Image 1 (cartoon, rainbow, N blue to C red):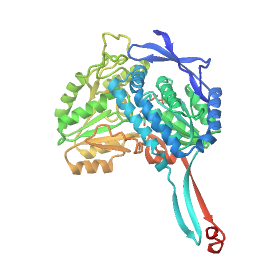
Image 2: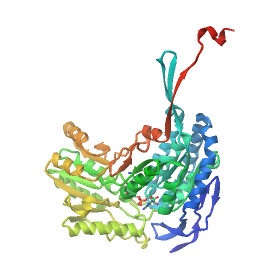
Image 3: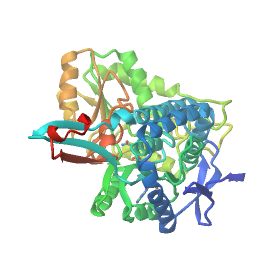
Image 4: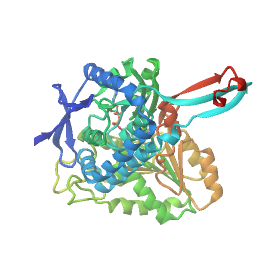
Length: 498
Ligand code: NAD
């Protein structure tokens, strides 16, 4: 059903908010199934206008003293905090996260603004005197020019905030293309940056799907592309962008393993596992989607997990009045995909220990709800073991020993996160040393990195060389210039002696 009044979804180009006359795609309130907006599907004309605006804004922005750029982000940080509730309501409305989850994700986004405020320190270069007689050498970091960001549906504020604050603080200008499923929160973020005093054209927003992305990847003035989304698209973006001579960092999907050893603190492990698997309705790249129980751990872990899953209250997240433990999935189509994967597990011989497929919410019969689900006795060859589910579905695999658990985790195509719950330092050490994943947790369910650390996915979870966030992102958004200097003359011509 269409809401009576659709929320506007303009593009933001050269400091102007423009409502393009283009065909659009519906944006839903996943709690009710209502259409709340229409996201215009832009192409090369919109991308060209946005990139040209960003290119025109670049010289003045690059020459703005770094301390002034940083001050702007201090102001921005305060504005985001002042508008915290409004932003969280928007995230929950268009994505379906609970308000608690929206708040958590926005705090993570704010940490990225805070990191960008450190630009004067982050952009320090280095000097070495006397590399030859009277010759000095210095390296400085300079911005690239126009950078682009393409973001997924699952974190409408946090993932864009992984990208544009640091890119801009480094002196670049930026074109953001948010997910067409959740385009509204990104517009609020841009509105606040405009209020903080950002000059026109420094940040631009275009909307669309593949055509829009392809136009960004082909545009000769785009120097670098940051991407977050599914692995097949990440691979495509990396291949196409690099072929076109751009720097590319592309985060992909994931399948994260959480090993529970028999000596673990079982109640705390179960609590962490339930949060890792069902938090954000499983729609996060660091969700703990597979529990591997070792030895007798299964006997206590599985029944306790089932109890925890059954106690999760699902409901609508679009009003502050009713805040459940878990909200809906993003679209009806995505819910059907998740359902299909659970059914494939059942057909291929797994046991459905907790079944959320028929979950209903009384006051929102058309919402895209899917209850917490546990698929037990999953084997490595099953479809549900190999494919990213991206829903509130926890696979359980039962193993005899840690070696076997590590081998299975290491055969995954992905390499984002992996965790172990144990009270043994030796087991934890073995796991962290051998496991093939870029972010490792020890008695931590979701080892997602904070802004000052890079988001170090491996294998099909990342395509590129320099990761998003932290030091590597500073390198990604800058190029080094090395200057070698010699001054002729010397002390006899010293001007200060006069
Ligand atoms: P998606 O790959 O479908 O879309 C991501 C972006 O790419 C969107 O802006 C979309 O418009 C664009 N896009 C989609 N198909 C395209 C195509 N064929 N060609 C060019 N562009 C295309 O991902 P999604 O469903 O929005 O997000 C969920 C995925 O993102 C999951 O796989 C999740 O694991 C992943 N993710 C990864 C991380 C990480 O840091 N590794 C973080 C968040 C989400």
